[in-house]
Every structure is written in structure tokens, then in C-alpha cells.
Image 1 (cartoon, rainbow, N blue to C red):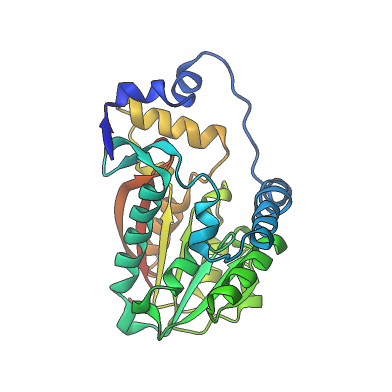
Image 2 (image 1 turned 30 degrees about the horizontal axis):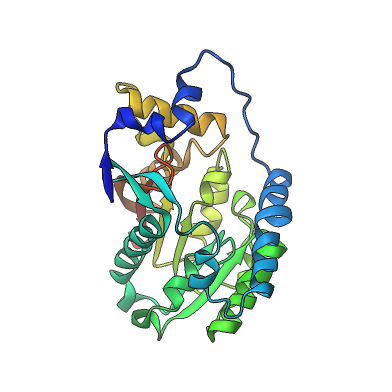
Length: 282
């Protein structure tokens, strides 16, 4: 990891110039049609083709073939670094496993909703510390579900894979048991406005804990330049702006309690994730 100053990001990243320019950047609307195009038709189709090409398509080998050895600019605990993508990804996985391990004795099922091609859930499932846990992966796109199944099969991982739609609160295909651990990672933020009634559908599943590893718009201040740039980045990309507000309102209603660890890490320096841990055991 090579530490750099905030002002040096502009040497390696195009977004600082875009974010401070007077140019009006068109908002990239995020809806299911756009998500299916970007991920189902493009990114996860590419992953499925890659799975069919390489000899041993484990999740680690798949990632090694998608710019894993590229150096990028990232943010970690408030500091900026020029770092290999594989290094920042390993820090992400450590954050996820360390967080989930706190609840290991309380849950039988670990469930990811919005699992993409399985980059997080399959790494967790392959960790020996989770070997006795049952794994469920929910994903919106058919191509993502297909990729998870193929990689898991090659790795000898038993996993249930099914459809889910976070924006609509549709998780019925997954048959998630009560008292599970449910987490999201860079997926809830694709719903620009999450409705409280939709989040209540998640609570209705009676999980032991819900963990969000997500960019959280509301935690950014209006009093410093970096935070303002992060807020603008989220707005331009039509990412979520109300997840924390919804959770806070549900806490006021007595439906959950939560803790938050703000802006821990980001592969993209303008999109760091916070960790929100929600308990429905009031």
C-alpha cells in the first residue's frame, strides 16, 4: 500500500475534475432495466464466459483474471492509497468476515442478498471458519445466479442460489429461515430510494442480524470538500440516498436497533462503504 495525499488523487483518477467542474453531468438512472443491462447482459455474462475458459474457476482464480493485479486508488479508514486491487479486495473480505464472525454462534444460515457473481459469499463460504454454516445467495440477474452456481460447484461449495429483488423486497424464492444472518454488499445502494415498507419485508424474515456493507449517503458532511464530492458522486450515479434514514426511522418505531461504522473502505475513493449492523432482537 502506497499512501498518497487527497490532492494527489487527481493524478490517478478522472472523477475529481468531473466532480468540481461546472459541467452538468447527466444523472445515470439506476433501475432494474439498467441493472440487467450493466450486470446481467455485460459484466456477469463476461464472468460466465470466463468461467468456461479457465481451467479451475474458483472465485480466487476468476478474480485473478479480472484486473486483480491492477493498481488503483482507494480509501481505507480515512486515508488514501495507491494499492493493488487484490490488496483492497482482501481488506474488504477481512472486514466482512471479522464482522460476520461476531454472530457465528447465533446463526445457522448466512445469506447474501444482491450477491452478484458470488465474489463475497463464495469467499466467505470457502473460509474454514464458516464450514458448518448453511449458505444462501440471492441475486437479481439470471447470469449472476448462473455464475454463482458454476463457481460453487467447481469449488465443492454447497449453496442455495435464487432470485431476489432488494428494491421490491422480494426474497420469497430464497426461503430464508428465521434467525439467519443476512447481509448486503454494494447492492442496496443500487436502489436510489428504499421504501420503509420494503425494508419491513426484510425485518419480517426475522433475521438475527442484518448487516449492510454499503455506501451511505447520509454520513457525508456538508462541511468538507471530500465529503461533498462523495455526495455528488452518489447523486450523479443515482445511488441510494436514504438507507440510513429508513433504518433510523425503523429504530424510532421500535423495530430494530443498530450500530454504524462510517466510511471504512472503498475500492473507489469516492464510494467508501460503511458497516451498519441491525438487530431485530429488541
